[in-house]
Amino acid sequence: MDIKQGFVGTVGQTPLIRLNYFSDLTGCEILGKAEFLNPGGSVKDRAALYIIEDAEKKGLLKPGGTVVEGTAGNTGIGLAHICNAKGYKCLIVIPNTQSQEKIDLLRTLGAEVRLVPAVPYKDPNNYVKLSGRIAAEMENAIWANQFDNLANRQAHYETTGPEIWQQTDGRIDAWVAATGTGGTYAGVALFLKEKNPAIRTVIADPMGSAIYSYAKTGTLCSTGSSITEGIGNSRITANLAGAPIDDAIQIEDQECLEIIYQLLHYDGLFMGGSVGINVGAAVRLAKELGPGHTIVTVLCDGGARYQSRLFNPEWLASKGLRVPEIKKR
Ligand code: PMP
Image (tube, rainbow, N blue to C red; front, side):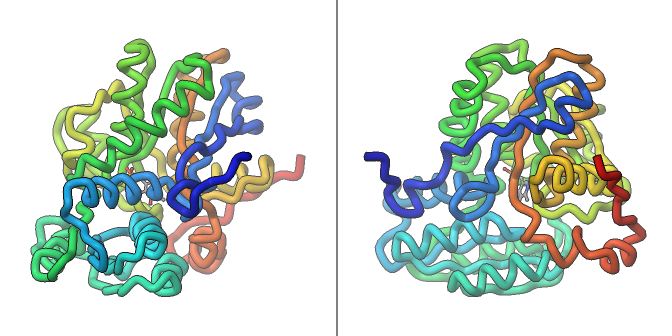
């Protein structure tokens, strides 16, 4: 018998998918960890589960308790699913710049959703800080604190990293991923470097994020902006701190769009925006390294979460972006 134990037992053990179009194009094996196949639909299910189970083990989260978080969406969605599966309440603070699909889904899942204006991290009303204050004022509540709670990257150090190592038989030359909290990138990078220090670990970054400049020059500095959601940062979180970074690659929105439309039309993979940044960086790295290398990245979530934006010509035009022209093959 092979039966998963509910939602919680179904998180992780995702397939590693060869991205055929980009692999054939570059002569490298470009592999995507299919995190969109987690039961809550994103890479954040793993962090959400580890954060909740860590709080349970420490006795911080008791029956009937509430999990509070500030999130761009996917962590909240993962937390809301797990709260339902385990009998907790869930309160999510989310900036009003995030896609309607994610906000609607959070409400459908039964989370209490507080929509707040998007203000920078240094502002006391930033959604992350606000969620921390709300949790502190509530009885029997925990603040998931995904940015600085190391249970997040531990999830990837203990599960995503080892899965990638096993699925490739250790034959991997590079790991490339964008960072939001940094949990995915750092957890996997730390694990893989322990297994083989020669594996290159590279950050993919959207415009408007300061992580690229940090990786290149050691100072946090950003220019431009991006339509991608859930990635990029203006600071080094506890989850990213101390992670090995060999290099960073910055990808513009139009290039990201080209990638996700090509993945959709040539490989049949309907992906969200951060996947365009990840695969775009993997393709650039493949061209830099030359044919014959194996590069692993993450397919963080699916495109349905962004249908009204990334796959909507009017919305793209309002951002000064074009619908990519995809030639029939
Ligand atoms: N892609 C998407 C769509 C996300 O929601 C997130 C999480 N914010 C990430 C990538 C980045 O993951 P992490 O927080 O582990 O850096």
